[in-house]
Length: 267
Image 1 (cartoon, helix red, strand yellow):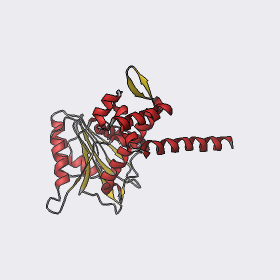
Image 2 (spheres, one colour):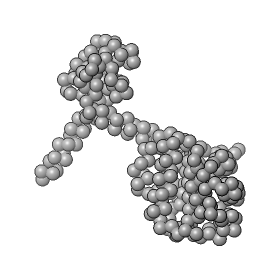
Image 3 (cartoon, helix red, strand yellow):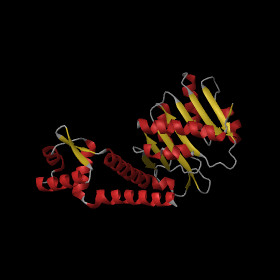
Image 4 (cartoon, rainbow, N blue to C red):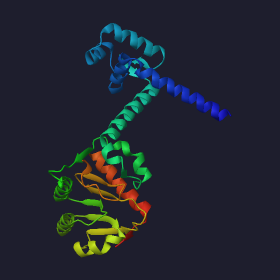
């Protein structure tokens, strides 16, 4: 009973903070400005373009409730308010991200993405949805091919065999560039037939039965992610792509997490 009461109390405090911050646009603007950097009133005025009266009144209220304090000739956010503002901005960025990529998330099989990678999904802030159309149906494949041509190294979850991808993997391997693939066991014969298996071209296989696949191409310069539709057909008209380092790191971790969860067998 005490635990439930404490949970309710904590929730009420969080709810109070969340309501307090956006209730006034002036207050939120000043908090956002101080989140970016400590400032005095003159600097806040220059940064926000708010009048001195509005800034003075808001600053006074924020000081009274402990949200900010005066330190070394400038106003500074309290630790708790900095955490609240940071979480609010991260949530906002995540909602924008989900809105931007919803065409590829909705009605697609995404359940095979490991939980650890889903928890770190917010790192994909600088990712872009590429959509092909009736005039350029192979646009997404061409983007992947170009990424492979410019790559030094590749890690890929490859749920199907595609001739041009195979050619690029072979070219990389012939230049002693590291290539590490993961594929379902049922396409093993096709891959072995089309790929020149060398020391620097490594393939791990997993039992694809009951697994919702996805396509992941992660090079040293780009990451590309594609999904299958709910009808089991790969959606070649939509891919997510980014050259951002955080996104590439996320993709590398996705590769590791998927390998760990699916007990891959090395060829």
